[in-house]
Image (cartoon, rainbow, N blue to C red; front, side, top):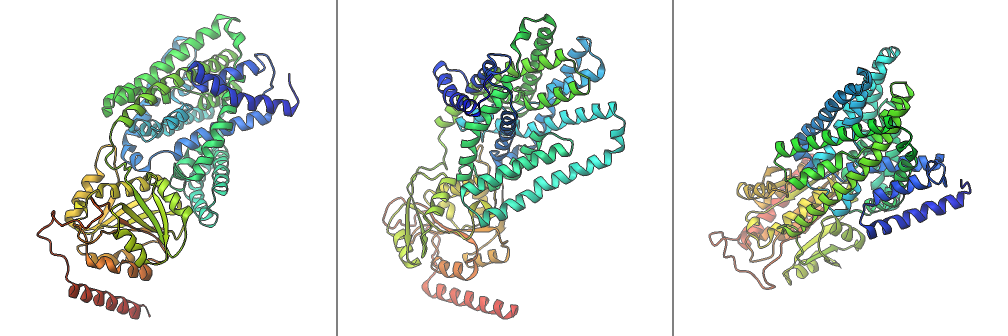
Length: 620
């Protein structure tokens, strides 16, 4: 056995480097490769490495990281739309395997208590193969959101069964039921309310990616610790932390890039190697009892999770490949099974044969889940890449700031909005900025960042009359939809009744769902009503237009003054849709629409100034 720390680190790093390369060459998932290497170098293989405390600690962080990543990468808008389905699937995913497991355990001769605990072990699952889904870029698929949402419910139900069994064996725990409930409530409040509040203030003060990575990982570990302190499991706390951090850590942000890099290249491989080091392959020829139990456990788990995925397909009208993706994600088992079988062994419900059979089950199911998830994710990725997305634009965008150079913030906004290689510039004043916009046809954004974009809680969008008739307005809508999805911000549209109907149609499109609310705004001069409804973490978006386009309004000339007077302390964007040509486009779509006269514009400007003056007097 190797005991030199440098030699151990060398073996671990070489494994992390070489295993993915070899697995790609022989076309097997790298998850399987890391588990097999763990078997070979572990105490039951060539005994090169001992399962040291440091490896176990880093491996446990890897297990927590997988659950954190699943929570962070959930598409908030799609998850809200799928939450009912996720709850239903969570019930399917626990009840069906639990029922089958209880029956098969009774047939094997186990008593009711043991059978119930084994059923809970079948009902739980770990999202071990989620990194495969993330790698193929299909994490926003409805099937993934259903599987991820159902995971939390199935794990919770399994842990409740474990707690119930433990309380039956130890009557003293019933006396402390109220204390346990208090711990659970405190944990939930801390993870879902206090930690996001702390993280938001941290990001406002330290917006660099390294500090963001450290605060997220720190809160993940603390959440896991508090969950275990409350009698739950650390993986549940990590998943809840991921959901709570969702809007603060956009998937395309520099913070998420660091989380993915460190987790996928260090923590997860160590966790998988740790699982492999637990597997004693000598059990395969030491006797038939362990093998028989393992075969029954594997068959029961596979049957139960496949039936749950099939019920989800029938209930929610999913494709066959989506059913397979759900099955691949939810039949892998590690964290929940290890927790239940270890505690069951410690309190005397499980014997050594069940413990060893469970570890063998982990190896087989992690392997089969890797292949199933890889195949389904690849098929879905091919489907989605072949499907043209109307608002996934590769149009040419111009991004700029006025009177300040914010190149980093512009680039961050373009990445979160998934814009295709935009041009960046900085103009000295609004006159020069508008002149630049009007002299070219590409879509444009003038951006003023007053706070880190991941701390924005709501996006207030002012949409002028006839904006939906603008050429390529769908790209502007797509910009808002993708940004909202990335930062988890709610969207409120301020517009007139006719344009609101068009926006509602855009929001309901299959695969492009956006949960938004609406406020009535008949005329552009009413845009200042937004100022009365703003909170401190809101961002303002004003959809403008160039002269001689369908939605152009002379009052757009007042936008710089409005922003300076009423919205200077908030982040804001002024967005111009793309024009068909670089020249003025005749208003052919709204020939019955008369643009405001210059005299009317002057009167409106005076009216706005007087209203602002009266409001100032009233405040004094």
